[in-house]
Image (cartoon, rainbow over all chains, first blue to last red; front, side, top):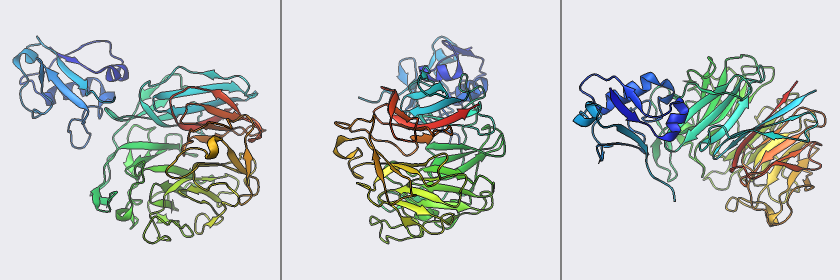
Length: 98
Length: 371
C-alpha cells in the first residue's frame, strides 16, 4: 500500500481523517498516485492538478523522503521507500502569505 | 409565517443567516468551507433548498458545492470548466493578446424554469451551463465567439462574467455583464449573443463609445418590467428601457457615480439602490460615511439613506454581488461590506441595522424569501 498525506483543506473536502493507504501497481509514479487519489475521492479532481493540462497547481508541492519532488516528471518512479510503503508521499499546500 | 435566509459569501467561508418574517433576530451559521473564498451562493427559485456555492482557493482552484437541504449539508459537484473549441485570446492589461484561462466562477444563477439547470459566470469571462444540477458544465461558446471576444480586456479585479439576469417569462433571453467588456444579451437561449452597450461612454478606452470595452460593474432588473435594466458601471449609473438596446445616464444628484452594486426594490420597479464610493482609486465611502442612495423615480433624483449606518470613520466597500432584496412587504434590503458587516433594512432602506458584524470580507449577499 502506498501512503499519502493530503493537506488539511483537502482532507476536509474529501472527509478523510488522517493518512491514505492506496494499492498502486508498480512502477509507483506521481501520476499513478494522483490518479489513485482522484479515483478514490472524485471530489479532489481539479484541486491538485489542472483538469485540462494535468499540470500540478502552482501552489501544490510534492514531498517525500525529505525531498521536494514537485518538479519531477509525472511518470518518474517515486523513491523506493514510497513505493514500498515505508515513507508517505506528501501533497503539500505551498507556504505563502505574510 | 415567512422566513428569510441570507446567503453570505466571504473571503474565508460562507455563512447563512436565518430569521422569521419579522427579521428582528438572526441566527448565524458556523462557517461553511472555512478558509476558502466563496465568491457566490444562490438558491434555486424552483427549489429553495437547493443552493449552489462557488468555492475557490489560490491553492486548490475551483469547486462547486451543492446543498439540497437549505445549506445544512453540502456536496461537491462538477468543477471541470473547459472552454469550448480553440481557446483563442483576449487582450491582456498591456493590450497584447493573452490566452483564455479559467480562473474561477464569479456568479451562479439557477434557472427559473428547469430544476436541474444552472448557469455559471467565469473568469476569464465565459458563460457555462449545467443541466444536471452542476455535475457537468458546458460553455455557451457563442458569447466569446460573438465577434468581440478578442477585444475584451480584464479590469483590475480580473475579466469576470459577474452578472447573469434571466428573463422572467422568456427563457431564451439572458443578459450578462463582464468586467471590462460590457453587457451582452442572447435571445436564443445562449447560442448567439450581441453586445448591448449603445449609450455607454468610458473615457478610459480609446473610443469612449466603442461597442465593447466598458467596465460594467453590475446590472439589475425587476421581474415585472424586464425590458428595463439598471446599470452601475465604472463611473455612471445607467438605464435602458429597451432590453439594453440603448442606455442613458441616470446618475443625477448622486455625490459620485462610481460604485459596484445596484439593485431594484422587490415591489417597486422604479425604486433602485446604489452605494456610491469615492473613486476608482479609493474604494470607500465619501467622507467616511456609509450611505446607500435610493431613487424612487428610476434614477436622476437620489436620496441618501443613513439611518443606522456608520456616518464617520467608515472606509469599507460594498462589492458588486453584495446587495440583494427579499420579497416581503415591506421589502427587505441587505448588503455586505468588506469590513465583514451585513446590514439589513426591513423598510425599503429607511433604516438599517447590522444583522451580523465581524465576518471576513463579504463578497456576495443573496436573499431567499421562504414560505
